Length: 249
Image 1: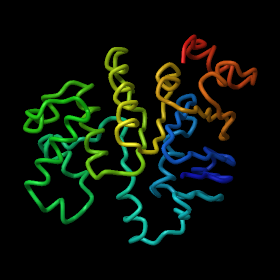
Image 2: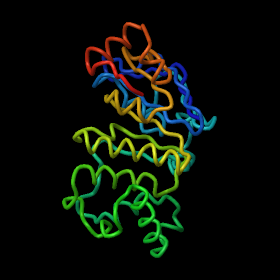
Image 3: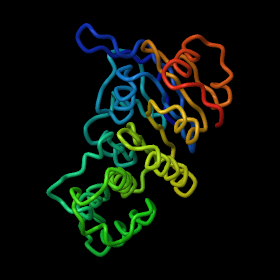
């Protein structure tokens, strides 16, 4: 379980989070929506300790993340897979080497046969053929890079998956492919996931529940149906003005 209680964060004079409360249950996929620049990625980075709150509490499996020492935090991060917005692949390394970096067990990481087998498994899970392992990021399309980034995130068999704008920059067809992949991994791996996005349609598709971050706070949390039926002014404004009201879940 992930819990955020009264989380505040500011950078200089800019207040980003202003008392965020959010709970994500084990095995759930939570879609986190909000306008660009509203602090969604900042919120996400609190969960694995990349950013510490100015005030408030962040818990993962009842561990207070901001209070963890270096070793304890490193141990926690081994259970959290992080999918970066732009893939964050190393251009000078092959796809195999990039995915191998996600293997967090040191004994396994030093076992070449294990790594070969695990990278193959992860490529299969993200619907990429085995020969992609020998390619380099420059050889891949944008959608393939996104999938390799997801393969790296799951290589260490995490309990949690954090997706930071996984469909950003993709055309609708490839965005649908990534959304379908998120759904597939949720079913096959049983992970707990948070999917940060500004894409209403995709968020409604993949999320068991959806949270809207607006004005530094979580304005509403609910199922896609509850969000669609909400009369809250901030919810209506976001859905209608920016992206249009979704007609399906």
